[in-house]
Image 1 (cartoon, rainbow over the protein chains, first blue to last red):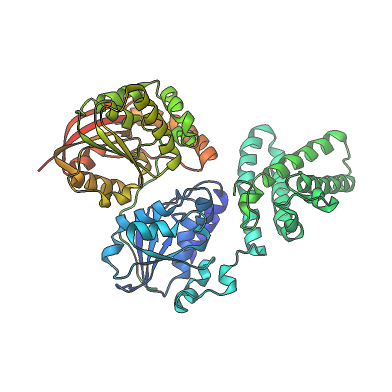
Image 2: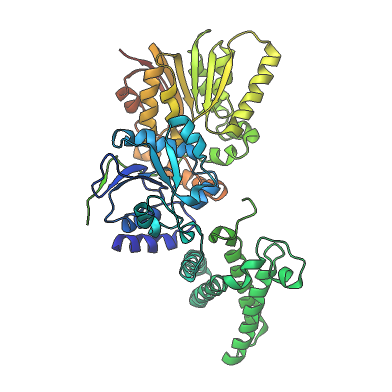
Length: 288
Length: 237
């Protein structure tokens, strides 16, 4: 649990970077020749979560090469394919350890893996596991039966705040590095701005989710649509209004102050939203 | 808590001067121009030296053929080539180049068969079915386990005294060379990752791995600042 939490914290600060673990075979518990064989990616946080969620189980976990990227992004981006699954099966020695030929693949890898190809090339049957690692024990206990919850991709408040923290942490590091040479006094308010904007953007996601990814003809849809830049303007507009109000409270309504921090808000908004599609599991990017 | 066992040794991520290759792979038609520019034409010369060892009629396997740089050279030397890669897009470019070459010289000489497959599927290739196994800038994209697997099967599918030809990125020898090399590669790797979300890794201990796989090295040459190796080895036993 501690290593999972530690890995989670680290990955918040390197959210945009790969964090590869070595492709390998992991024995969980005391598996035997009839134990399930699960496949996952080699992003460290995923592996840590699986080791935590699967404690008490007896199975083989194949860590396939996804270039250190989480399974969903890797599969969608062509970095986690049936070739990688075949590779870990062939190079791990799993074929000598089990007398069955059935794999459990992560559901979110479906966009990148052709299970027919795997069956044709190496005669391993594949089944899609649940979306969330926490459901794997129940999935295995139920002989592969999946409830509706196991099939659904969610973006609940916890995940949204996790994404918010990840984005904010990385942007803050960049901001600190730049402003350490430019204006140190601005670092703390800038970090507060970044975290605040990020929290608002992600926590209010359900309010504008239905307008995403679909060009709209209604004024509401256009106003908040990402493609039209609406959500960015809305967020920045609200921030600027708040900035003016706050300037009145602290007694500094000078134009340079307002312009400087309004521009900062605009830059932060654009950074936070340029890959919002990639940060959520429910808003597909235009490439996909 | 139940014991958890890692069954295979780990590998460290490393960066590469050929990381820009990953950007170019996303646009195969620009790949050859880009690689030529990036290596100042030296890669062409290295590939020429390696493939000079191919004789007419040799059955050649090109592992990770990409856009066909080695495939075309083997074909030009009269080899009967099987070219394999996991990227159908890269192979399409290779296929067009082969067609253009054959249109120019006629149908004489060896032929080329393209197979969309990864190194992990080499176990399906015929034992002793090739005289030459060659690979250019492919091993640097493989994991340690995949490299071992590829070398094992390369030895199996080679005829007695068959030849293994490899041109790939290796870490330079010595601290004085590795430091500027790393400083040069870090920004390149970052840039490549931004564009492609991937990177490559220099192949550590390539000659040792080749020897351990059952080959005798006949020729090994480092290029540039020592970050590229051409290697020709013969199957022993």
